[in-house]
Length: 378
Image (cartoon, rainbow, N blue to C red):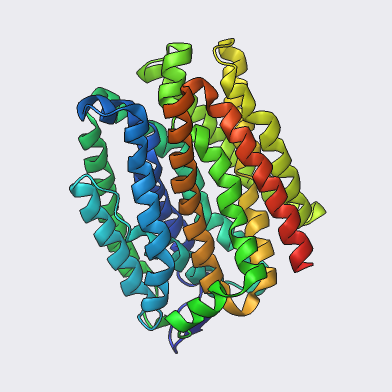
């Protein structure tokens, strides 16, 4: 996966490398997903409908999904330090102009490959989990913090905050990522061959069908809770924190469950869980305690998929790990785009109260997808 030239360090020697990459993923995750928490301020400031504001997430996600694997393939011959630093620089620049930079799609899969490639084989799973932990942690602190800043000071200030957090990480990437670290050449041809591999691509796209159902509700969670529960800035911030806590615990539990029962069974159970947990959002309002419990349990199951999905993909295509990881990262943002667009269509046609039912129907498709994929791949 990774070619290390003489003198390059291992993860153990490059002390603090994995936590630094995880911190960078936290900032990127914050910039990517905090639009969920600031959807109401953006809609009010720009005089947009809720469904129209949801297209902010859709457009960002589409840019990421298209450019992420292309940028990884196009930069395959470049040093990893330069690629990571360039990704963060462009991401910060995008935040300065209040836009979510698609160049972030170059950072996350490259960071995962660097951590995995510099780790001993028996520790690669932990290294991958640690790097992606930053993205999950962004759900706990980054999204609520961005939403709170947007409600209190304005949504533009939230993007300035993310840009400021990116600056020290650019320096850390440049000084901590080992010199002489390069991928074995990954080309657009390698990407094309993987895109034409039916069983692998069907497995990759489970990320899209599964998370797409989640994003039908998640993208519009702030206006949904505001309209049905009457919650304002503090209530929505607390709801996002509870959601994020469930996501972090789910990320940790998912790896243990996968080790115990296998990736395929884990993903099937998680897909079934969404049919149970998503329709109740069409039953709001309900007691605040019940809503908070739902907001914790839902992501507990929803974000447990990552370890199982990565293990399954690496088992299906170990010779193309970097390409598969990039495609899976892109699939996350395809999910955000598709789920947000479908949720916006449901909202426009039937109102916020129909989002839970629409998401439950989407979860049914995810179950069909995983069963079909498992059968095809054996």
